[in-house]
Length: 253
Image (cartoon, rainbow, N blue to C red; front, side, top):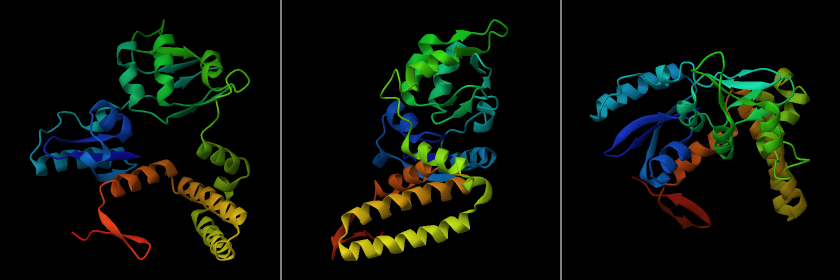
C-alpha cells in the first residue's frame, strides 16, 4: 500500500511506511501530518502526488515516484544468497522504504523488518558480477533473526502466522472475500451472545476469530490488514470529540 501524505505548509510526498518515512526520518508525529490518498497502484499514486503538489502550490518532484523505484527491491534469491538491485551506498534507504517486503529462497522465507536493517548493512557485500548490486547470505540472515532454536525472540508476526495458516488450508486459493464477510457476521453474532452472557472466554475467542477473518478478507482483496490499521489510526489520531452515553462522538467540522 502506498500513502500520499501531507505535512501542512511543508510538502506532499509518497511512502510505503508512514512511521519510518514521516515520523522517524522527518520527525512529524501522526497528528502533525495527514494522509490524503492511499492506493496499491504505484502509477496512480505517482500521478496523484504530482497533481496535488501542483494544486497545493508545493515544489514539484522532478521524477515520478514510480520511476524512483522501478527496479527497487526486486530481490533475486538463490539457494545461497539474496541479491538486492542497488549498491551498498543506496541499500539502507531502499530497505527503509520497503519494510514488510517478503521474498522466498529455496530454503527460507523472509519478511523485511526495521530491526533487520542494521544487520543487513553490516553484512551485505558488493556483488562480484555487478557493482550496482549487493547481497547477503541467506543462512546467516535466517540464523540471526528467524531461527527460533537459536533465537527465541524470532517469532513471526501474528498476522503472518494467520496468513500462513490460511494459505496452507487453501482459503486464499479456493475462498473469496464474500464468504469471509459472511463468516465475519457469524463471528460478530457469537461475540454479541458472549457479551450478553458475560462469558469472558467466549468474548476472547470471538474477538480473536474476527481478527483472523478480517486478516483473510483483507488478503483476498489484495491488501494487508496492517495497512488498514495504519490508515484507520492516522485518521483517529487527529480526531477530536467527546464521550456521550458511553460512545465517543467525533467533533463535527
